[in-house]
Image (cartoon, rainbow, N blue to C red; front, side, top):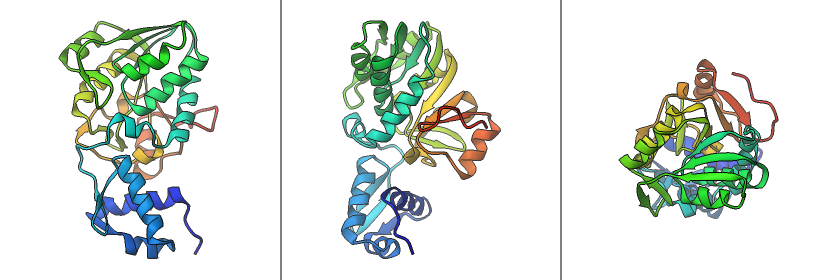
Length: 263
């Protein structure tokens, strides 16, 4: 049997943990035809992204309400998220008003906008997003008021949500901890209201999410798939998620393609 690539091994580990509460390193190594040290590195990487938990002799499913802080997530899947960010930036036109929420992928998106866009107005609850956009003098940045959460480098709370409700935007770009056939899922409960408000106040709404979030169900559902205009990702969804996106006519924009996958 051909040896699985790193990304395929990690997908298999995630799939196994959706059906079993615990997997053993030695059993995975035997199944994949690799060393136990290789599997330990896979487990370490997935744990760093908050997708699983390291456990004695193997790994277990991550709690639905847990994820690593922004700094750790911002260092994971960097190239994939950079490609997603550049593809999402292609959707933006001069003169538009955008809403961008706090997150590691939206931070990459802000950096892509700073490098290529002009004449935008951007409302955000993210200090990191605002700092990245500040590198471009043609982008006007509006920062939401509220309670600063250092772990997320973002601003949250009732005041934040109320403030967003006073504005309207051409497009919202949000990130998420997970995406299932039932909708957008999130580990950070404080972020849910902010995301909902941005989606509600925008004419079009896009989710920026890499393939590792597919099928990940977490503590809170932000909105069903019907709230989205499209998703921008690095790999085409499959199975139930692909069908649900098609049913709700959500366009799938692949980082490596110029045109969306029509659903």
